[in-house]
Amino acid sequence: MKKIFVLISFTLLMGIVLMNSCKAPLTGNEEKNNSAVTDTINGLMSEITNYANQLNSDSTFKFLNADSSSVYMSGGMHYSYESLKTAFKNMYSGFKSQQISLIFSDVKVPAPGIAIWIGYMKGSFITKSDQVVEQFLCETWIWQRKPAGWKVIHYHESILRMPAQEQKKLVEVALGKLAGELSAKTLKPADLKPLLTAFLVKYPLVYGTTLAFAPVTVDGKSEKAAPYFYRSGNEFKQAELPEAYDYTASDWYVVPVKTKAPCWSNPYYDAGGGGVVMITYSVPLFGKDNKLIGVLTSDLELK
Image 1 (cartoon, rainbow, N blue to C red):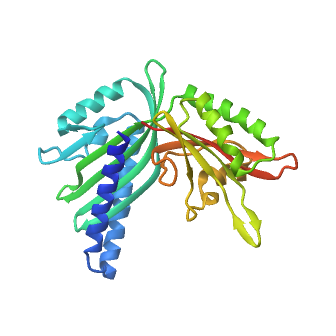
Image 2 (image 1 turned 60 degrees about the horizontal axis):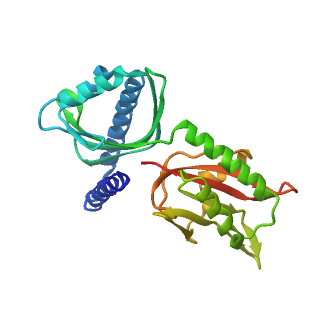
Image 3 (image 1 turned 90 degrees about the vertical axis):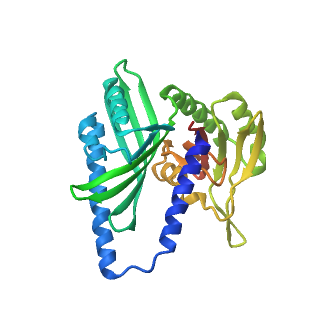
């Protein structure tokens, strides 16, 4: 599913890029109009998210176009307006609560009266049986201005299941223990392969791991090292993060260094390392002198 998710996202984004590249530069009035459309669509999407968090499918669906020309897709399945509305009513009837939070969104206005909203969101819900489920949502909403106002004429949602709480807890304990062991060692990048591959062997749910060393200055030049080890079938592979990729600017590195505390990242697509959608648990590693050694990580793949 992750390959379909990435392909759909990439194809959509490339289509938008091509549409935009073929357009003439915007005039001042066009820019002003597009900005107003963007504000309107963001406001409507905020309303929809609030209704979803209230488990109010009726209010959500008032924004969707009801005729047969509209196309709605969720979880890889095609729906009509009525079948999608029924599916959401049935789904919400099994929930105690739901919370959807936005990670990233963008609005494109490829033509007058048309707007495309793209968003990545983190969602969680509690079932009537008290099961907690977390998901990563990639959604595309195509809006059209109609006489009665803006209506959704296409909706596409890709869903990736987040790891269960017990899986995340296992990783937290395991990586904390490894961090304690490594902080007592004098480490070099070349030392990591047996240590980190042994960690992957012991914890099969972990997709990949690295120790991203704090930069050091050698002959006036800042040097970084973050050898990454990950699963590939029954084997383990090593990837050196590209030189152009400054991991010290990434949230999974910056946040634990700044807070001096472990943390989980939001979901993201790891183009520079494993090439999958994942979340990362990061532990800052400090030596006996309280000097930063680096950030130790474990990745869990979203499927």
